[in-house]
Length: 544
Picture (cartoon, rainbow, N blue to C red):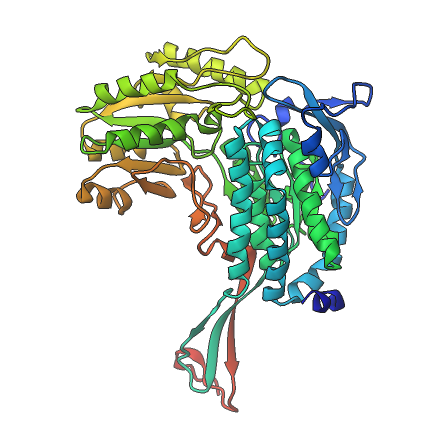
């Protein structure tokens, strides 16, 4: 199989986008020169060595490594130390990369899908070999605890497994024709170059969802990760590069251009990027969607979430308690699917809250690489300020702090996970804050809970805890949760890869990962074949 593959081998500038980086990442980017210390910390050296990283790294890959843009520090959220530096790319280097990708896309789309799947399988194995150090790098650079860092890499591995199977099942369909002697089908073909702008909170997995499916569908991929997680982007790309080199394939198939808002904006505006996948805030995502639509491109938007868990009076309260704790505190409240709102049935409200507050007080906050830590730091100092302002807003809008509400006086970006009691109509509840603040409120019944769940502008994830089948089917039905994810008896976070991931309303409507999300990476053609010498027209039209 490998030998067969070997043989086959601006635009209008606007000020529309101030940032196409996720959330607050671009605002915390630090640009410097090489005058500061340039040594890898001894405690991180093993991680860097296993991933072929240096302290100073190039951030552009398009078959070879380069980069002539600003030098950006990667800072550990746990202690504020500089763990490495990346010389990022420029708009010109993005343009050069896209030019190179144009030259290889024909070869790749003409490669049979099962053979493309074989390459993704090898990428899966290469990622699996580096699971431990790559997971540790995610924890070090992003700040999530080590089990979550490894879990994120595992998610990329899992989607590669899915993509491998998909490579043999990219099915169209045969449709009966009303005309005799005619054969009608729907055929799916590669869409072209796919651009991925990913977020800091999942610096590996989101790219993995897009890359694995896109490659199997026959498209080259260009990636711009968040500026604060450039090392993770480079480490992943180096792993994929080795697989491509081993198979005699051009590295441009998995291109990387680390950079700032100017690079992201150019990627969004460029006609050569046929599908633009963006993960980040609703505010920036709206501008991305508008810009791509103006050039009649396609966008895949994964934006804000303001997710709720509902606990009914007939629920398994122990199961609900453990689920809420993970969903609200995991990744220090920085998942798109983090639980922001907790809707408790009035009959169990006080009992449940008492247990939840007690559980919150037992959470171990600390170094994400240390065993036993359940809550690591926020990603940036800017996020800490959002947390402060969120606490102030809760108090100003009539809410109460039940536990937490503190910024820890220690190195790093540590805050105490917080529970509030507040009206569901408060502005601070209606607008997502990407920090571990959980707003709680009472509900009278399921209809009341659904009304509150659906009252926000976002529609990503939701979950209902109940033992009542009537409640269950109401929740997932047409008059239930209006979110893209409507779980029952499990957290709002922690999605599997088998189904499509995404949300409605201001979450953007995009779908990534499993199910038939692959269709977004392809173009559909309706093909009618006349195998007779006759010319019957549709709808019985006579033109003689």
